[in-house]
Image (cartoon, rainbow, N blue to C red; front, top):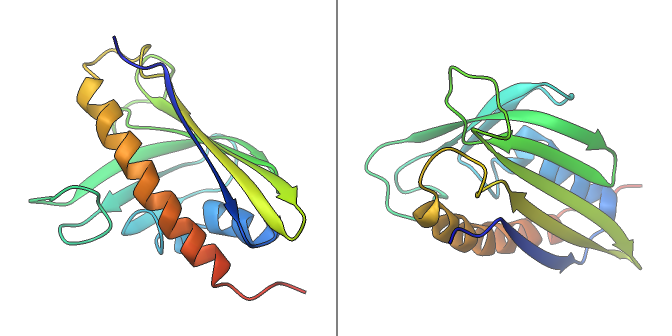
Length: 156
């Protein structure tokens, strides 16, 4: 049976504003997540994430992989969500895409970040291998996010 969702939670020793920028600005996401990230940051905005051979992908790639995404919700600096993995020529829906939600909660001078990826059981394709790959990917990418965000100077 395919898992309905993946959830990871980390504490990042950086204020929410730093973490928010790292998870919502394409230029910053390209420093810890994909090798190239481009999207319009507004609900309904669309874009792509690309992983290159030898880049930030968590598996060996023979050729670049570009994944479409669509922004769902933005509530600065608390919640950011997008749908992804849908066919590039289609609008993202619960039947053809996964939902990724970043929830940020201040914790002293740090930020507790919860990432939930859901919709595996609803999409109309075999997702068993996809669940395993995404589970491993979130471990690697969130560790990179923590390192990246903790290296950023505090905003004044």
